[in-house]
Length: 181
Image (cartoon, rainbow, N blue to C red; front, side):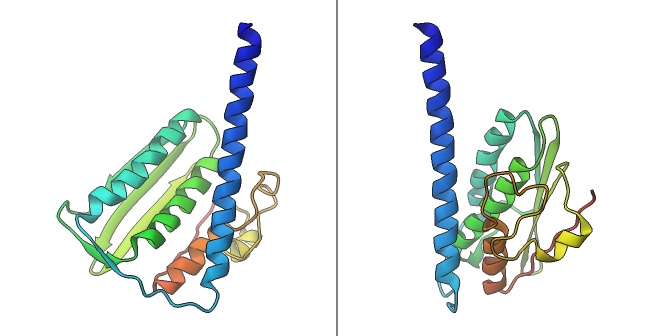
């Protein structure tokens, strides 16, 4: 029966998506737990950095397309640039930032991503046309297990941005947020 097969496929896809979300959340929680009192010492040379970065970023382009969102990326990083950093940490940071942008941006809206290297600093910016964050919630956005009032029904645990903050801080970086509601 075609109708039952279609329903089964639909339910299976939803179950897989939910399972992947739970696995990502659990991995973020475990990573966050491991970071307590630990210094990052792993440094890998990436060459070329831009192609590794873009492979990760472009994987999110398909996710945005599924939600019928615009996804625009611009890089000012030269193709031959290599950086000394922990790629797994950078990957988790970028993954969580882009995951949030897609999750909290409505259908038919856009996400803008830029990357650059200024002196020795890697600058990564994500902006979107999402729901925004109220001014009174901006201070706690990077706190563990905190979600904004608007996003508390999203099924998340408030781990992603706190993990981003912890990783960026341990890498001697700065993460900040600006929002308009």
